[in-house]
Image 1: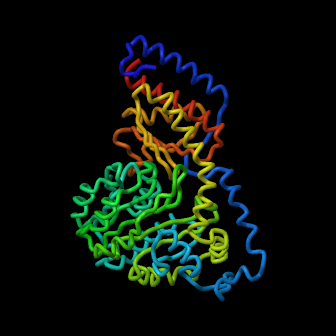
Image 2: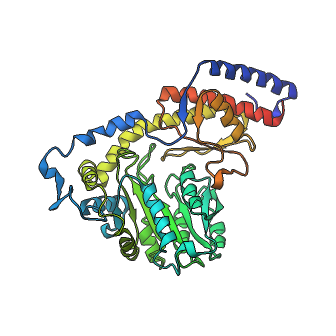
Image 3: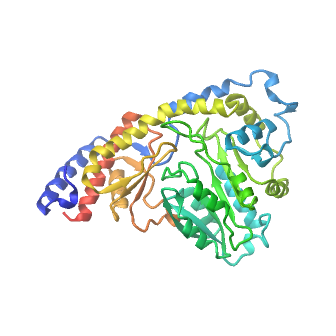
Length: 424
């Protein structure tokens, strides 16, 4: 195979006709394959379904003298707070344990800032003329949608191999209307980047013009290696405190891809001062989240070491799926010089950059052949990729056999779109 840009017009036309025949044959198979979102596959869900065999003894419903079936303990069972604190590397008193969704906790944090203001807000954000928000891109579409929902002006920040472009961030926060930034610091969605220590320390050292600027630190993949050893990460709360900005950050995590996405446990972690402020705002809203499920997870996960052992079992499922994707790209796409992609060692996605102007066309062709993927542009604010290039590949849900089929379709469609862009 030769790079497509070096082909003669006649060679491009011949290649296009060959690929069109392959696509027609794939369409005739009536495929229905889904790589749209980072859902754990059935094998992973089966791996942890023994969690429901716990709590068969009445004593299992008592945690340190607390009956988990009753009201109370709004910020979570002390044992659950300790478990998350150990995993995240912070203090138990900095942890609030909620329900099954970290996204819900993130939304609620933004909502509280909007309706009531944060600890250092001069006024609720709904009273501000304009609220702007920094969005490292490619990034997580659901993050962007949260802040878009509240009418914030979303500002793209380029992602680098070390995290957000900190020169751009430091310049942007000079504007007092800029109230925060989304961050996925380990195996970022979709880039798979681990923020460097320099990036983390520069974030903690920010001196924004807005007194209530907020780093939304979504540590979704903190223990989610699928290749190699566990990679430790720094405690952002301690680093912000050392930099003299203890109230700058809210950190979020969950067990959604450790145990069960629909029945896990989520938390946020923040300074003690922020915690006191949030407790005041949450008291009228909730008496307590599901402490039975919190207790179930304490009994099941036990501690960080036991959790990491469980994650090795997940890695044994996830690793082959990611290798399936990268092997197909290496074989079918790399020699053609029409795309680039990252090779993550953890998380749930492969960030793929097609030839500019071809992402939408590639995914439209995939859909015709029965392969559903995340919409082109979804990894950018407002769903608008200025290059029409980035595609988020989510290998986790399909079995390897289906994934192999899906990658055949993807590679054929990508080649067709590239040839159309080059001219056939």
